[in-house]
Image (cartoon, rainbow, N blue to C red):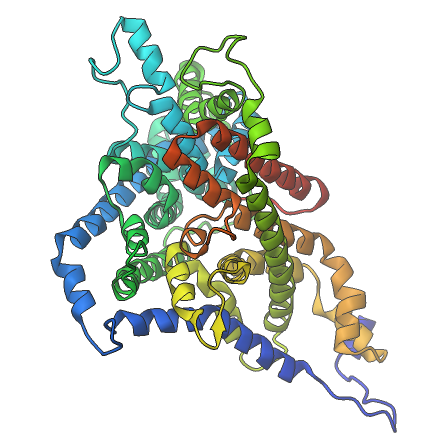
Length: 573
């Protein structure tokens, strides 16, 4: 009460002591920096799309985009495969989330851990693993199929052909369904079970209650999850490039990448990027509108305990569903990567003669490319995580505390990169920093800018959550006793949000290590990262080194996730 009363009248500085509040100039500098990071690349992307090679204004690129089948077909492929992934994710994740949240299904903690493992697995690593599992001739699943039925490769049709549009949809869904699961599970956790109990008392069966009561309440979460799954699939580059390109199937991301091959067609690449940007913005606006709906609201007091549904005979099918999905997304891919890393010939039998550490020695002791890639990756990712954490902490503090005019605009700039697909951001950065006065292409600096910009929304959301837990009155009290705003931030706020800042650094680092879509257009021979090195190795079918690098990347990711869950109060989902 004393603090609250004191905040009404903040005393002026003592006589003779002059103070200068740098908050506004500092905020203006931060806003300008955000604008340079986010708006400048989008400006050059837009301008270049309307210019020909001579720099003259033209609509030729857009005419070609809507009339040339080589562009129309990839756009259509992108849309229908993304929709298929969204539908598949909803069909799979909705019952899984209900089973975990509302039933007596055994092993819930294990299933949640495996879903988290699927969530943090980079989709392109899953694609690599499924090449080893579902390759039409040498894939291990097809080898088991041929051996089981006495068939011969190249003569009989394979059980799985992962190099197809269907294979691409399948693999993308395996690493996208956790988004839908998280949306729906979180929604179910806040729905009071009294509504379901009332339906049961009135004679409704378990399934009727689920369809008539529970499903309408989680419909907004289902729709939002579908849109996020659609969006994630539409903007992926690694999975389509690994699984669809060998089958002659292009998506918009692989088409944009091909436009950067020699000779580069930058105007067309810029024009092809804008539809992805526009669709992304529309989907995110729709997702925000759906999650903000109040059509299905629960009004009431404190909810009682969650009503647990007994599965009885359905327990077996429920376990089979989880077993199939999580085996395909985590168990089999991790197992095949681990096996491939320790055998000489990945397509051969697992015998003592085939076991070897040759790939590990090659990657870490002999082959210079992975060593350089590790150095580049850790250097640029650590720098991006540090710079990004400092930036979002300052921006979050200024915007959430509403200390300056235009704080809403600052928050908008910090979160707007979520609407920019990685490959679109890369095109914008390439167009921006291959011209004077800042020629950064060919250096790690341009990759650093890509990582900082792309991870801004993640970092901002984490810091915002931490700052909201610290009441401004604590800072006001220190100001009353003569502390400057900076001193209050350092001595009061910073220690209280330390865990959130640590989590933010780790989140940005993990996101940067996993990044491929932006890096694939910005790297050179001396600035390759781990993800790009793996992508290059696939062209020569060096699956052993790819498996070693994959396991290393996963080990780093899970170690950092463990740090988040052990030493901070942040959850990855």
